[in-house]
Image (cartoon, rainbow over all chains, first blue to last red; front, side):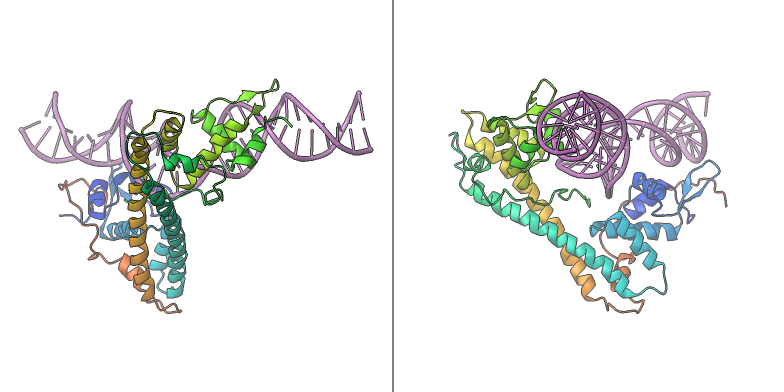
Length: 152
Length: 152
DNA sequence: CTTGACCTTCCCATGATGGGAAGCCCTATC
DNA sequence: GATAGGGCTTCCCATCATGGGAAGGTCAAG
C-alpha cells in the first residue's frame, strides 16, 4: 500500500505508456524519477497527477511543447490566466485550420465518389479528375505536414 | 524546345518539389527517370502528368501508398471503377474519423477557453480541468502491486 | 533454483517533408 | 580560357509522438 509506484503502475494509473513516461523524462517534460537501489523508477501521487495532466492535454491535441508551457503555468501560483488562454488559443487556431483543411478534402472527395459508378466498368470520375491537368481547384498548394499528431 | 525537362522544371510544372520527386523515385512510387550523360534526371510530358496526378492526390490527403494503388489503376485499362472507389472510400473514412476527432477537441477547448477570464488573475478553468483527476477520460486498469524495495 | 513478469538502456521505424553539406555540371560573362 | 553562379547529384539528419524489440538485470512465487 505504498504511495510509490513502479513505472508500469504509473502508466496504468495515468494512461501514459511506460515508454512515453521514460521519453518525457528524457526530453525534460517531467523531472527525473526517484529510483530504487536496483534502478527502478518510482512515482508518487504528485508525479502521477502530473502524468494525468499530460494525458488530458494530449487528448486535447496539445503538443509536448505546449504541455511544457502549461505545466510551467500550472505550477506557477502567480500565473496570469491570460497566459494559459494564449497557449490554448494558439492551439485552437491550429486545430481549426486543420479541421478546415480536412473538411475541404472530405467535401471534394465526396463529390468525386458520388459520381463513381461503383461497378466493373473502367470509367471513373475520380481518376479522371486526378489526371485532369486543367483542374484548377486542386492545383494550389495546400498545407503539407498534414496532421499526423495522434492523440490516441 | 525539348520536351525533356530537368528536375527543377518538372518540380515547378507539377507542384511537387525536386526533393520529393527524388524521394518518390527512391521508394518506387514512380519509375527511375531517364538521365543525361552527366547524370541529370530528365522528365517528359508523361512523367510530368504523373507528377501532377500525385500532387492532386496528395492535396486530397491520399497517402503515398494509396497513390501507388491509384496510379496502378489509372494505368490499367481494364480496371473496375469500384476498385478506385474502394480506395477513395477507405480514405474518406479515415478523413471523417480524423475530422471528428479534431472537431471534438475544438469543442472541448472552446468550452474551456470560454470560461477563462483572460486577465491577470491566476484562476484558470483550463488548468483546473486538466488537473482534475475526477475528469472522465482515462481511468484505466491497474495491475497488481509489488512491494519493491525503496531507496527512501 | 527456475520461471515469468517486470524493469533497465539502446537502437530502429514510422510518414511526408525539408535542410544542408560536399562536390559535379553547365552556361554566361569578363 | 577562366571564373562565377546556379542547378544538379548523393548522403545524412531533423521533425513529432509513438511503438517494437533486443539484451540483460531484478524480483516474488512455486
